[in-house]
Image (cartoon, rainbow, N blue to C red; front, side, top):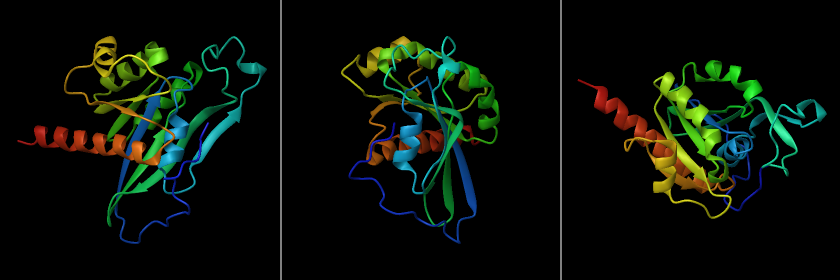
Length: 200
């Protein structure tokens, strides 16, 4: 769940009239890893969230054993916006984490420039599907470790996820806007490098 922090924007920022380029990225990861929190922390508008209260209908379907404090769940996607400059706007789509909603992912990937894989080191195996799908779609991505507690080093995480050295791997706190901005800046730099590397 989202926790307000001191670096949270106090008011809504209207879309600039000069904005002509819309860039789309997707936030993926396992169930309860912090995707909704990340979108809510960094968005300059009040994020659209499709969170619903978890009910008995999910018993035996969703594994909540390691996220017992989680009371709501995303059933479609989260949506936020960040203005990059006078002409470019970044749109964020947070994907649902439960396996029963994975069918939504391919629609969210359509038209996306890249993705952030948000990781909880207590449940690294929950990240494998995200990485597999992104590699299948040949979509550039970065991996952000959402530090809930002390855990394995980034080097150990890279090895556990079999990440190639060219995939950026960083730490973040999904509750803090400045930290989430750093994740997105890392992704944009990675995308720029990828684009320049593919230019003849």
